[in-house]
Image (cartoon, each protein chain N blue to C red):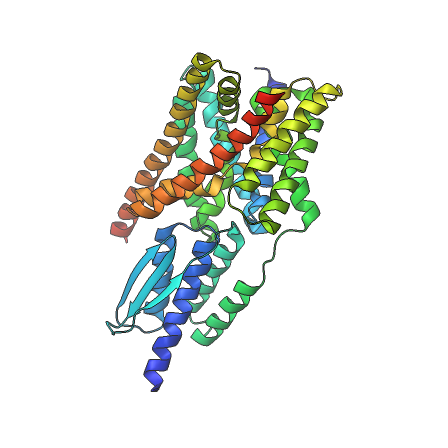
Length: 149
Length: 251
């Protein structure tokens, strides 16, 4: 992966996250921040892959980062958390693998299709588990914060 | 009707309307419960009992006999309304607005929807498709045609879900249109890869709200609503998949 490709990816993630936010009618003042959270999730994913962590761990870490950052953003802007994490999640969706799965099933190549199905299931599971972990982190922090007060 | 009963009725009406608006527009259940409890407490109710599900809300205050039901009939995604209810609830908590004002503003919010202008939504659909195609597949050549196909697919989705109102038909039809357009544009020599164009173009249709809320609801212990949303997301995804598969099978 070259530097140019990396920059294009970051810009593409930012734009796509904001655009998805517009489709969901997110308030204007939340758009920019949700775009950056989308980029953050992608960065963690990409760095994990470059460092040899594999795409499942990459998606997991990306989802954790999105979850934790969204709660920070929600606290800071005093807005609901789902305004930030739903658009930011979209670049992590395993669109390519899901499409390959559908295509191979449609063309009758079931073995290849099952491989991709497994990938889709693992990535979706990793994202869901990442959200779970971020929720745990958030709840632990809330509890610590309450006791601190 | 005595004054206190009238006040109780107003509390119930306000809290139930707030809850219904939030669920209708894609909030997670825990936030709805939290907001409704806050409204009741801030309005002076001693206790409040709540039963919130994705298809309806039950609420009683002060341990009285009359609990009230608010069914939730439709579900759209308009996250701005959730943010507005959240803001109104905060304003009510610091007593910037009275309960009556709160109720009036909720009714007003319910009747109008303030979406982004249509051209901006079109542009947004294009800008979800194109950049994600590049991010996923690194195929810069097909950027423009993916933007175009994704935009047309989203218009089909928008029109069907607005005027026909059959669930999941919109996803299916727009996925089929996207598949056809992708094959056709490849045929005309506008795009290099049918696969890449389709992958980018279906991204605006991804059921992001049900996916996220399903996970959050299940984690918060609202198992029924979480599973219901998970099924909703799964069926949407399957409808998109079948639309694409149909095109690929016959062409």
